[in-house]
Image 1 (cartoon, rainbow over the protein chains, first blue to last red):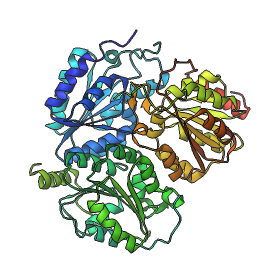
Image 2 (image 1 turned 60 degrees about the vertical axis):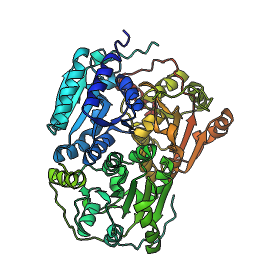
Image 3 (image 1 turned 90 degrees about the vertical axis):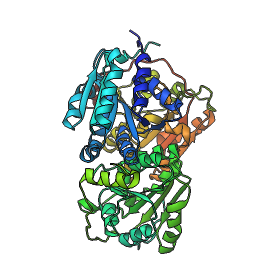
Image 4 (image 1 turned 180 degrees about the horizontal axis):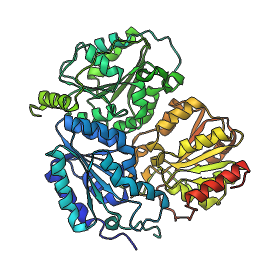
Length: 175
Length: 196
Length: 199
């Protein structure tokens, strides 16, 4: 099965991020975030920050908030493993942190190496004090991100939206 | 690899000289001794001290510099902290923030954990790594004369600039700044933005 | 941002990896996640190949551990630019430790090929060769042509290391080659092959 409806929800999520006044978008690429990253780069009011490792993003967004801007961190579930210690800073300082995580290692995964981190993602985030919103229905992604952004920026919390692999689609390796 | 030269500079004096004429500089310090150094030479609401988040000082400075393009941002951190997030140099170099300066107070030791040697004690050359990442200015400072020349670079040369200041590993008193994260964040934002 | 299809580079990643591995002798190979797995598998599925289909940023350190354990054998890392960037601090660790038998080969397409071909830092001024040299690698090389590759092959396989090369390749997707992906199987097979002990 090929990837389906890859971009539809991305447009709505991008609108939500704009409405939340997100000005910095830090990312390590994932196929599921392709459209969102393209929109971030194309938007002159957004500073896209390409990272070598996801932990950098937690620190960048801490600095963004200190400087008066809001940001979002995009990553794949494998990247959640890289951010854990750095989350301590956001947690202790009550920095708002909005993370959009596209899931691997679950629905229809073909790569066994993705499974351990994918299966641990939710509990590892929760153990680190992150509020987790999970979404598996494409039509609910934008409203979930909107709620998460509010909780992050106004409620002053670390919030992760986990976008299920069922939504992102299988990785199609036959092409 | 950098040639080995004699190290004589005292970290506390170096930091005192660095911050003497700070103007409206925004300062981010990495955990451990650079945080104590900054506090020892004078606590300031424009200081944001990291007490954790090892490897995150340079990236925190990057986010701040992007959000405040008209203000000079200085990241002052240690060699061990820098090494833990060294990929951040590539991320900074790609962004090219002209208002960001990075200064490593390099005692070649993990000072808080028993003075174990870091990689910089074994030939790893952080300014050369920064240059490889794309920094146009990346210097090593060994002497008082070189330090005097480096200070204006840190404060006003278009960035990103990277300066590694080699200091002795002689122990210093621990001067502890406020450590409550929300307090530090609110103080910094209130002073900068007029809001918390 | 997708990488523009026109780059100044002409080398094909798969041919490069196949050429390097033609001369591998008894070398052990550790691959980074992504295209490098398929490149190495396309040359020959050798039991002395350790395919890492995960742990982005970990290939160089896995290979370093093998290099310490197998000091008489050459250990090659074949990985991508994005994978290496995710664990770039490991170059400093390897630079300090100076393993003589380790060669790191970065197949640099300047893009995250597995996730939509977004630019990596290497397409925007980051010089991995310079960073490796700054980290203390004994010998480093930038390879952009077939002639340079041929000239460098003896060093890749024999130069007292740690050795580091970046091979600039065109950013073009190659067909996927099925490498064994069960980690337990691959790692046991590898261990048996390099130690001579039974799996």
